[in-house]
Image (tube, rainbow, N blue to C red; front, side, top):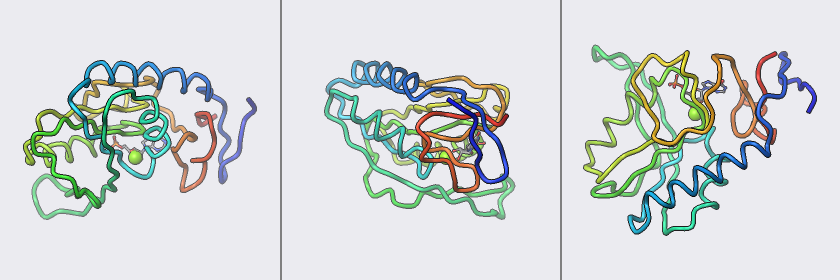
Length: 177
Ligand code: IMP
Ligand code: MG
């Protein structure tokens, strides 16, 4: 794999498409084991997680449902600052086993603010599956039960992740050079 250009920046190969596929196979088989007979509801956070979600979902060999949401952040007037709302969540989470799918957890702020809102609906359980985590960037306590790769605190693109709108269609993951 060669270096690539996205907008004004150069990115170098970091995780190959084959390595991602192998990791997703492992996560899917673990989830299939853990959720056998529970008919989990996956909630994929758009846009970034759409490729991760579709690859992971196809690898499951149990009954499972999936739904897609977008998160919008508003400047709130509360002391906590921003308010995060979900667009597109139509399913009731009451007594469901929920697995939230994220492409990457960076500071953890988004999920830290959003997860309590899902808890309010009274799900049977909520876990997070993230393809990538940046442990050195984490500022809020978000601990995915399923996590693909721990990566250094460097910006990455590819496999659904973008730099200013571009790069999502690149099959592997590339790191800022
Ligand atoms: P957090 O709230 O700081 O955890 O932000 C998570 C979100 O920031 C992810 O869902 C991505 O949309 C975006 N993000 C964080 N790091 C990267 C990166 O390295 N590349 C592309 N998007 C990123
Ligand atoms: Mg995202």
